Length: 184
Image (cartoon, rainbow, N blue to C red; front, top):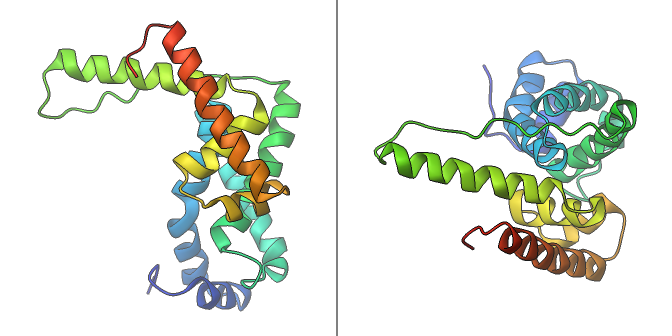
C-alpha cells in the first residue's frame, strides 16, 4: 500500500530497504516539485521530464547521502535537479524552448482565458531570460516556496546573497515586463 503521508525519513528508510511502495510514494510526493523547478529554470518541458527522471534515478545512488538534519528532502532533490539541469543544458548548449501556454477550460470567457495564457507566457519568457543566478533564486523562493535558508543550501551561498538575488530578479522582471507593455 502506497503511503505518501508518511514522513520522508520513513519513506527513505523503506526505499533503502528495497520496498517498492516507498519508492513510489517518494516519486509521487516530489516528482511535480522537481519537474516544476526544472521547467521554470529551463523553459523546456522536454528537459524538465528528462531531468526529473534522472533525479529519481540518482536518488537510488544517493540515499545514503541524505541527512534530514542538514535540510529537507525537497531541497536535497532540487539540489540534484540543479546539477542535472546544468549538465543537460551544457549538453544542449543552452537550448531553451518555451512551452505552450496552459489554456485550461473553465468558467472564464475565451478572451479572458487567452489573455491570461498570453500573460503567463510572457512571464515565463521573462523568467527564463533572467541571468541564471537570479533566475535560480527567484524560482526557488518565489515559485517553489523555499525559504531563503533552504535556497541558500541548494545554491551553496549565503542567505543574504539569496535575498539580494531574489530582490534583483524581481526588479529585472518588472523592467522586462514593463518594456513589453505587460500589465504588472
